Length: 84
Image 1 (tube, rainbow, N blue to C red):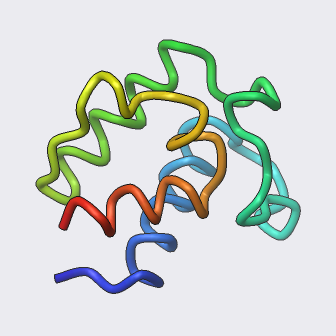
Image 2 (image 1 turned 90 degrees about the horizontal axis):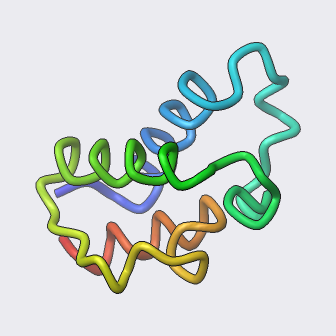
Image 3 (image 1 turned 90 degrees about the vertical axis):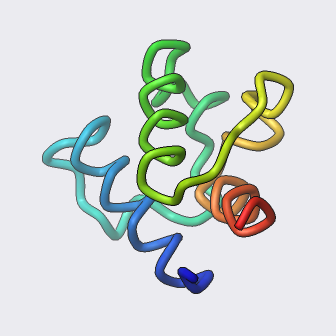
């Protein structure tokens, strides 16, 4: 089972590679607003959810695909960890 830090590192790497190419990884904090900050639009959010489901073998329900669960690296990590 993936640890909290493993989940966070994997998700952060995916977001940096897919949605923030060329950005300084040090500027991407656990609390950086992804959805409300405009980094993730609806299509990007679906790509992220698909990645999470494939990578960690979890099922993310439609009602969980919200800013509350997907707006920050911390929230995403917590959601995946709760599903494992």
